[in-house]
Amino acid sequence: MQVFRHFPLSSNTPIGLTIGNFDGVHIGHQALIKKLIAESKKRNLTPSVMTFEPHPKEFFISENAPSRLTTLREKLEFFLDYGIEKVFVCAFNQKFSNISSEAFMGQILKEQLKVQLLIVGDDFRFGSKRQAGIEDLKKNAFELFEIPEIDLNGKRVSSTRIREGLKEGRIEEVNQFLGRPYTISGKVVEGDKRGRQMGFPTANIHMKHLRPALTGVYAVKLGNRNGVANLGVRPTIAGTPKLLLEVHLLNFNEDIYGQHVQVTFLEKIRDEMKFENFFDHKIINDDIEVAYFQLKEKVMNFLQK
Image (cartoon, rainbow, N blue to C red):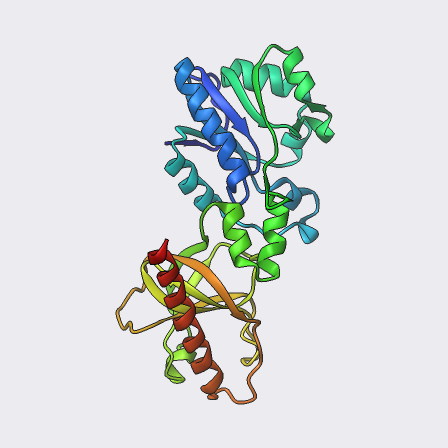
């Protein structure tokens, strides 16, 4: 898969394209991508994605922008898995936001990228101040497919609803909307070894998520290992400057420093809480027991299907 951080002056081959933020790459996004790949194959086009970095809302309302569900690296990994061959990562800044809809369609899509097929959601808007939409694309002779929104259990699938579900601990619903378990990836780094002092060594995951959509204590998997994760500010320990993701792996004692890992969130155990005593093990032991039985139950349910 080729990744471009700028638009080439001219594309070597005509492409099929879908455009969006794709935060979370949920089942609605996946429907766009599947349609793109199928229709591009029929026309011998290169299936391609245009996305934005940062998220446009992070540019316009940075302090109140929504939490990210996926980092750029995670999105690119999903695009690769789904069969996308080219990704154009647009630097969303003042210059890009001022591009008129006419220039976007004519200069960028037609002349530079040689777009012959567009697959977009039925609420797609583009151009300065979101001035244009699907009717404008049709007027400019693009071959176009509109993909309607997806409803699941009577609820519209959207990145916003997934963020709400994560915040409220509705992991099972979130995973249905994503079509897979929710994950956060990062590199295992040296921590302050507080967990080891308590008898519960943890893997400290360096996240690119500055404001993750969920916090608390969870039953998780790190790779194929079962564990308990705390994602939060560790209120028992004063002075922690930012959110931390720490994972205690069950029955595991190996060196994984420096590895890039993926943490899969399976079930929320509780909100983060402040201990009266730093060395109070009872609550942590309870978390581990709850995680063990939740993970065991999920395995049994899987085997019975």
